[in-house]
Length: 228
Picture 1 (cartoon, rainbow, N blue to C red):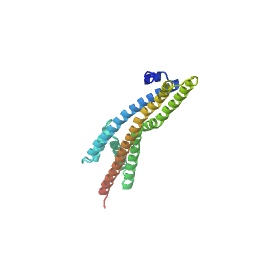
Picture 2: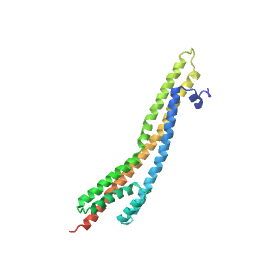
Picture 3: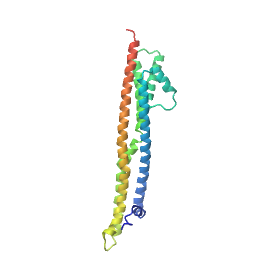
Picture 4: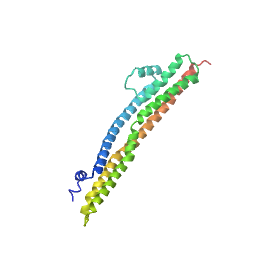
């Protein structure tokens, strides 16, 4: 009885459909864990780089110096710094064209920052849809394996004259393993998806606020330069 209910023994004696479901779920679980570790590291780097740039921005360093430093970096810039660089680049281009209207300068900088913001948000949200799919689909894949396994078990019992618990238990246990592995793949993906979505939303809100603050600074500077 104990030998029959050993998980490895059950999987080795399972039908090919249950084996295929288990292999698929294990592969999905490994892939989701790879995404989880990679996404956690990436969001951690984004947070630290945004914090570092924001400290530099509010430290009193001139915007021209910050912009020069940002465009000189080939790697290592964070999303907030790239948004700032995009807005400042467009602002300076319009100034070089001798455009003096405050509204045109601000609109150009804001459009550039919105485009950069959307690009950064797309990068931060990448692979979250995969975790969401794993979280929602894995239990149903496991349930499919369970239903098929139970059908296979009862089909095998149809020709027996006497059916006992010891006869039924291995087939039912074999089928339930697929559901267990489906939950094993889905639960970490659900937790990670919710946690990463919260972090992305916070980072996006933080960058949105920074864009508004930077626009206000540009507007104040332009108003101070405009003769009355």
